[in-house]
Length: 457
Ligand code: 4AD
Ligand code: MG
Image (tube, rainbow, N blue to C red; front, side, top):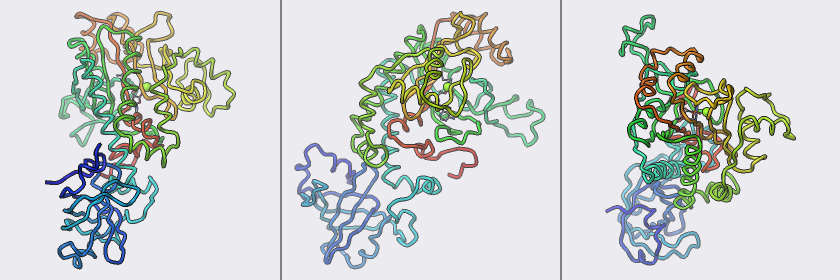
């Protein structure tokens, strides 16, 4: 039976493992040859740390195996765990048997060198999960996904799967990838679905259908945007978590979003300590303190109109201009979060003209019940709103946004048959991973990043 390295190195009582005969498997990270034996650092991805293995002539066929023990080779090792005299680990493995499963030509293996740039590692996405940084990113990402389900399940939200292929443009931005089996696009009625179809930009509209029957739901799935963004915060394919709550207003929405974000951060602080310490040391000094601060603080609340006033008075030159009625740019969002509030903030009541058609009118003829959560380092991490549940207002908005009423017939019927106040939000999962790890580029926190010109793996 194989033991995962995490079980051994993260044991609450390492002493109980001493003297145990075990078998591990993984990839060799480094080999240090001494006179009569070798130190092998073995990693199996279950945890950041390597298990130190002492390989010597006691191993059957040692002489034959020795040249095969190279960086990158995959091996299965059996032996006895002993207390380690080294100060870096409590236990090490004295090998009695070793099997080389897959040879690795050390002269060609790209991860032979200790440090590579993240840009280079993206070109070898099939090997980069074997690096310390990627391993840590992927373990934290996994923990954040698990925390997401824990949070919503504990609150009684139902996990709903919304379609990836859709006929409606939720955000109305027209940044959609077309899905087609046609070679000639002139007649969409001849296409597979008999009408134009796209990859979804958001599961929200379908999520609203479900909330208007099941009360509280959430989606967690891939979304696609064909925006030609070359920033460190945008992907063409990203994952989004979209809760939707019936009988809820903007206030309830903000409470849920703040609690969810804090829950996730608290979860990784508790369950991913080793990986976070790695990020704190090598990626962003002070990361753990920054995350703890988020958990401990209550988020600031600032209406959009006031945010514009704050930006006007800011002792800082911005690259992009801003004025009431324009969308905030990332530099404005980061100023508000990093320098003005020094913690996450929720900007509310945006001008109707810069937000999607479904957001609820505030009744002042100018603003809608929108909320964006802005965090230090990232800017916008969550976007949400109370939804327009009044049929006549929604029809007017659809007209105003020059959308096709027929495309939204079912969305409108939700307002005709037992309409309820409801609200929800979307969190960009990769932005959450960026926030939790301190990584700089969104392309390094998703296993196979999709961005303009890149869909290799
Ligand atoms: O603000 P957005 O566009 O909102 C919606 O899609 C709503 N339908 C959500 C809802 O109310 N149910 O996107 C939500 C979040 C953003 O705050 C951001 O974190 C992330 O999704 N996001 C992206 N992440 C990576 N790459 C992109 N191109 C992204 N676009 C949005
Ligand atoms: Mg947004």
